[in-house]
Image 1 (spheres, rainbow, N blue to C red):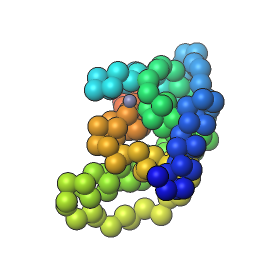
Image 2: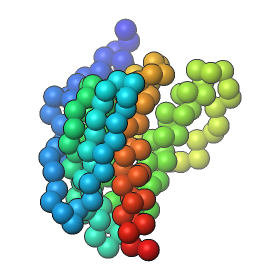
Image 3: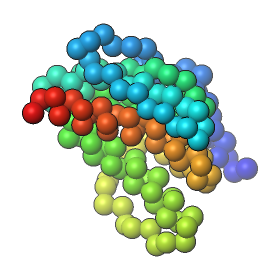
Length: 156
Ligand code: ZN
């Protein structure tokens, strides 16, 4: 195993052991649940949007180290961002996962158009060599997307 893989593993385990922004937010914060039946992961995302900004975000639920670490990293990068910025980050993260999936299936990966620095999240690239784990890594992100969609649906 390369030292980069070791570093990635360390980052993931650190977030798994000491999850950031864990807990609940009281209403009117929005609550949204996500499940990954393949692995048994459960993520509950609490989001408080104020003036189109992610004022606060908390994570509940339980699951494998990848699902929980990904959720923890997501809260760190998303908290305090505008909804537009959050959507760009979600897009960039999913693109990172998709590129890997495309490479695995032998398709030519599209050029990444985003210049967003994903920081610790890059560590998750190391684990998505196993396609089944991609659903673990993207669970929190899909749940956050659903959450934002639901909140914006309520406003309209
Ligand atoms: Zn999992």
